[in-house]
Image (cartoon, rainbow over all chains, first blue to last red; front, side, top):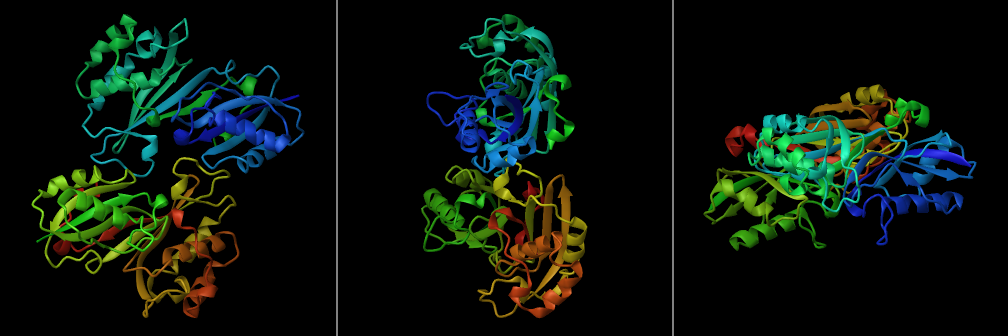
Length: 257
Length: 257
C-alpha cells in the first residue's frame, strides 16, 4: 500500500466542516467520493484536524493508504475533475508508512480576517467578518502578545471541549493590517475547540475598549470560558498552513504553489 | 426634486446583469426595490452603463431623482440594509440637475483577471477566469499596446452590436501581474458590446502563441469580428471605475473608500 499525503484548499461556505459526520456534506465526504470514483477504493482519509462548518482552508493536509498505481503527479488533476469547484487539491506526495496527517503535524497556522471598512468589501465577503465600528489595533496587538507561549487555554476554548488537557503552545500571534482588513495570524502546536475564534472575539472586545490589553494574563489564568470574549463567526476563519518535519512529509516548498 | 448619484459595488455572479430586463433579477431591479422600500417612490435609476450577466462591479455609478428628504449621508446604510449582501452602496452625493450617470461619464475602466495557476485559487474564483496553460505575458503586453488610441473597434465588438459608430478611444491599457493572476486594465471613452471580453480573448490567443502581437493593427483595420479572438467568459470581468468631471459629479476622492 502507498501512503499519499495531499494538500487541499477549500471554500468552506457550503459545507458542514472538514470531518465526516452524520449530516454529510463535508469536505472529507467529497474527497473520499472523488477517490472512490477514481480508484474504486472505499477508504477513509485522515485530516490534519477538523475545521468547523463555514471555516475555510488555504492549506489543509490529509493522508490515506491506497493500492492504486496512479503516478503521484496525476492525482491532483484527476481528483479536481471529480470535485466541486470550491474544493481544490493543490499537491500530492508519497510519504513514509509512518506518516499520519494529524499525529505527525508539528504546528498549524490559522488566519482570521476582519473587514473594518464602513461598508463590507463585496468581493470575498464570505471569507471575512465585517465589523464596521473602529477598532484600536495597537491595543489588540498588545493583547495578542500576551497569548504567546505555553499556557492553559481553558478560558479560550468552548465549554464543550472534550480534551482533558488544555495546555498548548502558541509560537507566533500577530495582526497584519491591509487597508480596511485586519488579518490575525496564530501559529500553535495545536488548537482547542473554537480557540482561534474565541481569541478573536476577545481581541475585538479589546479593540472596542471593553477589555484592556493588560487584562489578558488574568483571563488566561482564570481558566474560565466566561472571562474571555464571544466566539467570532466561522466565516472569517481560515486554516492557513500545517507544518510537518521534512523527514516525515517530504513536502517541498513548491507545494506552497 | 433632488438628483442623487451613488456608487455601488456588486458581485454579479447571481444576477442577470445591471440593467432591468424581462427576466428580472438584475442589480437595477434590486436597487429600485430597496429605494421603494425606503421612500415609497416608484422610480428608475440611470446606470453609467450596462454590465452583462455574471460581470461584477467594484464601482458602478447611477443617479435618480427623488422627492425624499432623507439626509444624503444616511442613504447608503439605509439602502444596504434593504439589499442582498452581494450588492453594497459605497457612497451617495447630491449632484446638479444636469448630471446623468451615463451621458456625463467621461471614461471608464474595466479590469479582467486571469488566474494562470496550475490549479485555480479557490478564494475569489468567481471573479477570475482560470487558464491553466502558460501565457506569454510579454507578448500580451506588446499586443495590448496596439489597442491604445482612437480606432474603429468593429473587430472587437459582438456582431450583434446595435451601435452605428464603432469608433472609440482607449486611453490606457496594460497588464499587471500579481503572482499567478494577470489583471488586464482597459480605460476608454466608452465600450462596445463585449469589447473588453473580446480584447481579452484575443490577448489569450497572443499569450498561447496563436496570434502574433504584430498582428493586432491588421485585426483592428479589418473591422471584422471574425479576425479577433473569442469572447472571454463574463466572470473574470469587473467594472473598475467610472470617471466624471468634478463639476458634474462633485464626487470626492473619499468616495473611493
